[in-house]
Image (cartoon, rainbow, N blue to C red; front, side):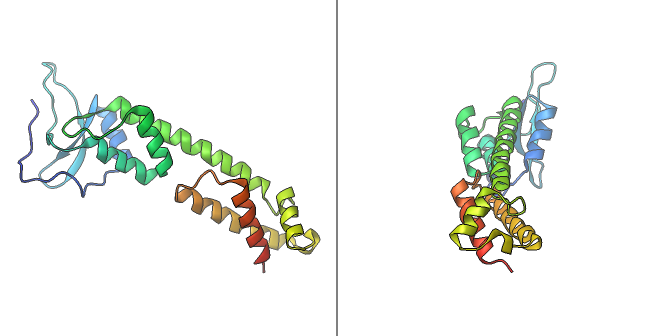
Length: 195
């Protein structure tokens, strides 16, 4: 039997569970739901007793899927989150549990996408390396009328460090993969402002 919450308890607009909470709940039952333990909202595993009775304290109007998608968007870029939602057909479903299989599949898809984008950015970052005297570095030097020989090893490491921070910032803000043109613009700016 599914117990419902008192009507005075609002939907969990202030609940911000992590993906790990969803992952852990999904490992414990065939579905996950948002529930209230009397003090706070929690991600709960929903399972069944041998007599097929549901065993979770569930609010009938709570949208577990939307809370899960919020958790996904806090861990991955908006592009990844929207692609996962589209591929898995995730949309608001108030009062319905979210399949544990879908939770795991969504997290796996998001992690795979992020790893793929990181790989693209890694390649772009390497192709713009000052330390390795990349062709992008040589073009940036030519554009600024600087001889590559005039940029010492320490300056090149500093330029690469600035570039690494740019790539990290882009990834943190969901702007991956970084285009080669954007990376080369960053490289030119870093070269121009070298110490």
